[in-house]
Image 1 (cartoon, rainbow, N blue to C red):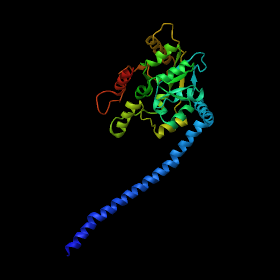
Image 2: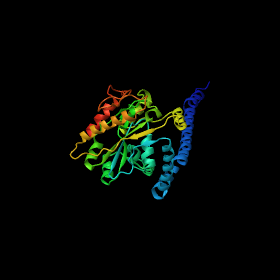
Image 3: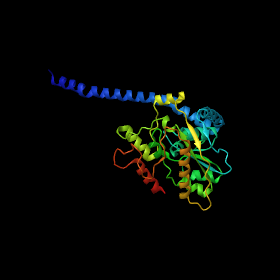
Image 4: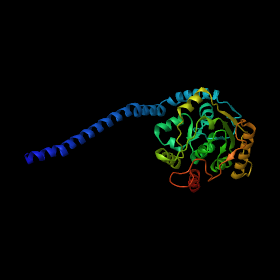
Length: 326
């Protein structure tokens, strides 16, 4: 055979065809990216921009509030609440427990039904479209400055006091509560605002909190916990179906609002708050619930929350971060 012909054949086999294949794959990748990008723009970006413009520049928020308030009324009809002082004469902090997976009851009764601002994670207020939707349904961020402005302006708000640490400690038919917070009680003493303790039964049983630190999902859970104080909050279809059928109902009870006493420190107010919560739980708990509240102290580990990279517990690490911020 002719050596030159052999070299040309080898060149076609190992140079030309791989180059053609590479260009074909690149072109196919670009085409797929364009198709995905166009669909994403049509079905996500453009509707989101329209929704943002509707909420931001028109009377859309009024209609949106009417719809969400109607939805909240339907949900509240099967989620009874007793003892709530929703028309206070002084600013009131509605302090809700437990967190559960999504803290449904506080948003139903306060944000949707009574249109009382309800605290959510600051992460949801960082993005334009989400921020507009959150504002339209009465959600505010949890920054201390925001809460200070609300109380200084004579406004009340609701907050799930335990936050993510309480969510990670969720167990059915138990009240594992986190009340070692400081800022809320300092604000109450500073502004003379009342604090109303609120308990909800059924929150822990509605959706299962799964904390798995292994694998990719575990790494994502750890990142959410460390950086935005969030959890992997995705209930399964069976739990959603049981909730929609009404197999699990939420029952909310509240104690009388606690007004700071003259000269009372925030530490004393917090201890009084915990005592009232314990009395409320003892008086209203279902028969199949644990006999007493279990308090999660600062630095105390919640169950199933070990970091995938260290022996430190997630709640302890987050508590240290909060201590450094203060």
